[in-house]
Image (cartoon, rainbow over all chains, first blue to last red; front, side):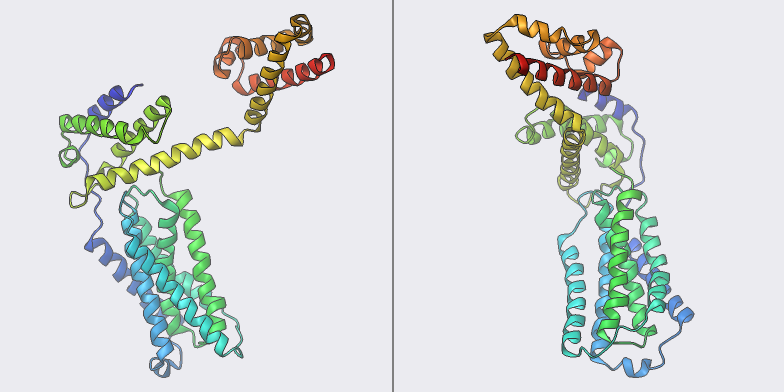
Length: 208
Length: 173
């Protein structure tokens, strides 16, 4: 078939379409459902017993802020990636930068105070997984009608968003603030979920 | 594009014609093969058609179109490279075809009779395939169609025939 014939066929086949927009409404849905998921996680797993002391610790505040910021940026990035040409380098770099900063802070703390042990963290992994389901799921649902080009990156950022909400909530659930514990059980879970997201994006998001 | 999203067929047809003209001039310096160029343009037009609902009038149409273009171009090149490299027979056949070309050039200088004797050692089907591919210069798909065989079958038979020819001609040269 030559190009002119294809154009004729596509034009004859044309039907009106409903625009798939990415805007404040979609972002708000992901944000509020993310917070809802965090709240649900706190109710299920319970607040840490030393929460009042933790809230006044500088490292706690910084890490929590970073995780929430990563979750918000990753959600927004996922929505943008669902349309061709929607990828925003500034947002991608900001999310990556904040994630790197979080890991760097933990490594810095670990180097300066290596006496801590990783301890067990299966509850932490469970809580992160539980809390990440709704935000990541809603992102995949919102982008189902998109036309993503960078499918692995979209999958990665969708699960990064969910996992970051999970890790943020874990700050309020898990009383072990040891950097090695956070790196081994929180950070590693987040990284594994990012990899899984990348694979899911490649497999399940429809190719343009 | 906005009118196309509303279902205006005439506007859509005009848009696709303009897009294809733009793509022709944009991709020509990047894609030297005219057949590939046509294929890629058609792939991109299909991509535009499938994703027309994602175009936002508040954003630049060109950046939307170029995102689809670059994606399809990369995907197309990747699939061509995969097809060329993943099938080991392709590499072997190319290599063997190159050796047969060389041998045949040598034979033209030396002794055509010897070559005819070597090719006579092949069974009828193998001989036919080698002659059709090498002498008449037909494509694998054309030979497969003519002899009512699968393309992979043709490649395997050619591969074995060239091996036989090569060793036979080496003994004689």
